[in-house]
Image 1 (tube, rainbow, N blue to C red):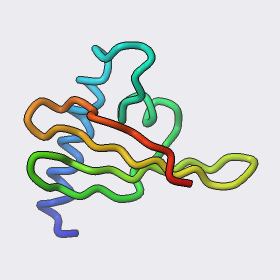
Image 2: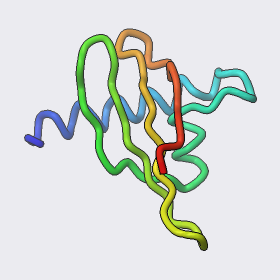
Image 3: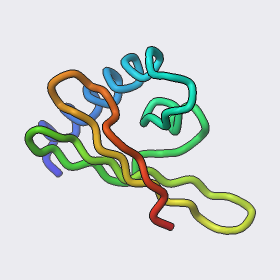
Image 4: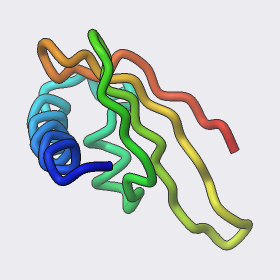
Length: 83
């Protein structure tokens, strides 16, 4: 990824974290995963969504989560465990 894309992703992660603080308690969000120790493994910018692959090492291996975030408002659309 180019430096410009990385900066854009960093800016989006920051805004996603802020927006997720207002999300309902039961809805998984990128911000909640980041607060739980997940790291951004990959991020792709596409319209109208920003897609994240998040990773966390656990005692039983690595957990991967895919999340889709609306670019327009920074709200997490969905998150799914993929591994």
